[in-house]
Image 1 (cartoon, rainbow, N blue to C red):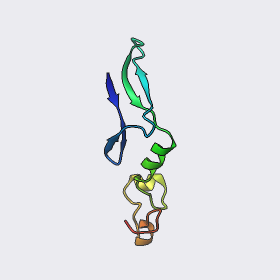
Image 2: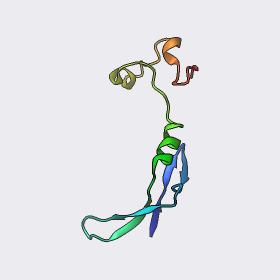
Image 3: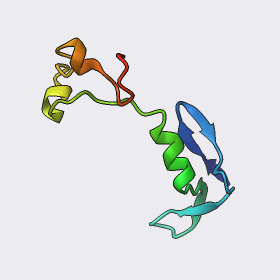
Length: 81
């Protein structure tokens, strides 16, 4: 059976607990893959690699105008990116 892992910062990984769940084909009702079942630790690991957006509206960021000034280009940690 196919295994679908977490992908965190571009790296595939198993859940810290090793827990998995079966993904079921809705048409056949047969399991076709096992998927890594993450908990809080997987979420926190993923959030640690996520980019921080500057203070701008989502529509502005979508147009690529979120980095209008050096002060706006500060990450959550306060350092420029």
